[in-house]
Length: 261
Image 1 (cartoon, helix red, strand yellow):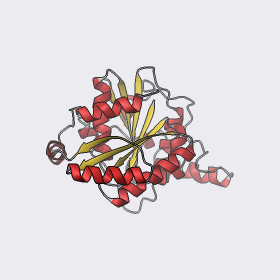
Image 2 (tube, helix red, strand yellow):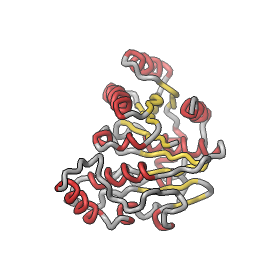
Image 3 (cartoon, one colour):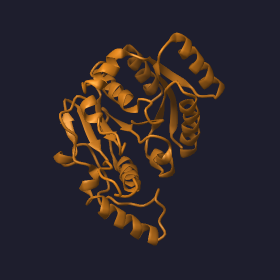
Image 4 (spheres, helix red, strand yellow):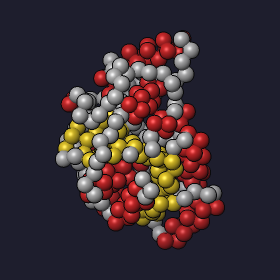
């Protein structure tokens, strides 16, 4: 199963990805995490890893090489959501060279690439790498892929969700985040993937939880779980500590994700 975690910037996608990953590991699943957020650099330590992997972008020649290939594909009439950059047909976690994947006790991390300097151009090559990697990634029976998406919805325009099984949207207590959640649901459905539902995150009171639940319900957004604001999580992120604990709420959310799969 390939699970895409989407949402507004700052809603807590990476936190949820980390908690889901450790929750799946607790259930005995091997998890390969794809970091496709070109700006956030914290995911590796949130997962309890010592260092990030070399970017998959470098595995196919680097950003400039990918840009040249994309220009050539555009010139030949290919659309971005259809073009091919990778030479290999199938990718497995075992076939990825060791420098491009960090593996620790059944938890594996790969990264599309990051924006490292000003004026280096748009993030389109990262999106192309993410889309094709997910398309060609073959999982074993006990393996689950969890994708930490870039903020917003631009990735839908690149056809990334066509290559995953289900989408989960993280919603924080703001109208902007709830509205984006509805758009994510609609775009997921039009892409052919399954929208599993929203995870409400960083709620600071039961009253606020009730209000956000009413808002999401009025917009037709199914909710598969809620995570109240927890100082332990905030302090861990502040102190650069791994989010090892699988909270009961996450275990229930995982059961919802795996339902009917």
